[in-house]
Image (cartoon, rainbow, N blue to C red; front, side, top):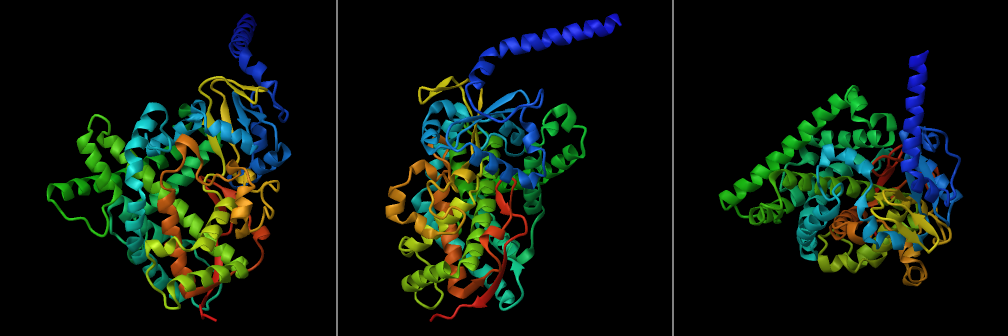
Length: 493
C-alpha cells in the first residue's frame, strides 16, 4: 500500500513539474479556438482512422475553421493550423518557420540530411549549392531526354488502343522512372523495357512505410518501433535503396576518372560530384548520397502523380482536353513531333491545365513547420516557440472564396484576370519561401513534354465524374482506385 502511495505521489509530482514547465505553452494555446482535447492523447482521436482517410479528416477540419488559427493537441505536442492565405504569407516569409517539424526526423532514416528533411544552416548552405544545378538551361536540355522516354511510353500505350478501361499509372510511372533516373542519377536502365528493378519497388514501399510511421503515434517511439515487423522491413528497404545510390555515385566517379563524355545530358549526380570534389568539407559522401535520393524521390513520384491526374482530368472533361490538344496541334502541327523548349513556352492553355491539376491534387497536401522563436501573428495570436505549424494546402486550394469552381477541373482559374484578383498564397503547389521546391521548372517541363506526346497521339476517355474520384493521402495525394482511362486514336478534325 505504501509503495502504491509513493508511486502515486511521484507521478503527481512529475505531472505538476511537467505542467509547470509548459505553463506558457498552455497559456498561449488557450487563446486559439479548437476541438475538444482529451487527456493524454489530446486531439489525436480525430485521426484514429485508416491512413487513406486522414486527408479528408484534415480537409473537414479546415472547412470548419476557415479563417482564424486553430489549435490541436497531438498528445503533448501543440499544433497550430492556419488556413488563411494572409497568414500563410507571413509564416512562409519568416525565418522563424524555416525549420521542418520534428516529425520529419522519422524520415531521416531513409533520406538522411537531404533538402526535404534537413533544416537550419545545413539546409540553407546545401540548397545554395544545389539550386544552381536545376536552372532553365538544365530544364531545356532535359526536353530531348524526356521526349525519348515519352515516345517509348506512347509506343507501349498503343497496345491499349480501343481496349477496356485500364489504370494508366503503371505506364506513366515507368516512363518517369526512366526519365528521372537519367536526368538525376545518370542511369540509363529502362524500366519500360525491363520492368521495375528491386530499387524501384523498394522506393515505392519506402514511401508507404514512412507515411505509416508518420501517422501512427504508437510507432514513433524507437523502443516500440524496433520491436515491430516494420523495423525489419525498413532495414531491407534501406539496404536495397542505399546500395543502388552507392552504385550511382561510384559510376559517376568512374566517369570522371576515365574522362567519359556525358551522354544526352550532364546529370545532377555528376554536378553534385563536381561540387563534392571542390568542397569536400561541405558535402561528404553520405550527404552526397542523401541529396541524390531526396532529389530523385522528389521528382519521380510527383511527376507520375501529376501526369496521371492530368490525363484523368482530360478524360473527365473532354472540352478542356480538346482545347489543350488544339493548342498543341497549332504549335506542332498534326503529325506528332518532338517539342522544342521554345514551343513548350507557347502552350499557355496547357500550362493553365497543369496548374489546376496541381491545385486539385497538390503533391504536398499538408505542410508542417516548426516555430523556432515566439511569433506574434496579426498582433493578436502568440505562436509559442517549438510549436508545430500545419498548413492545409489541399483545403486552401479548394476554398470557394478563392476558386470559382473549387471541386472541378477548371483551367480558367488561371486566366490572368482571375490570378490577379486572388491572394498569391492561395495557391502553393510547390510551397514558397526559403523551402520552396527547387525543381519546379524541371517538373513542369517533364510533365508538359509527356502530355504533349499523349494528346498528339491519343484521345482520352474516363467514366464518371471528378466528384466520384475518392482520394487518399500518403506522402502525396492519390486516388483510391487508380487512374482508369480508355484511349482512342486521335484524329484531328
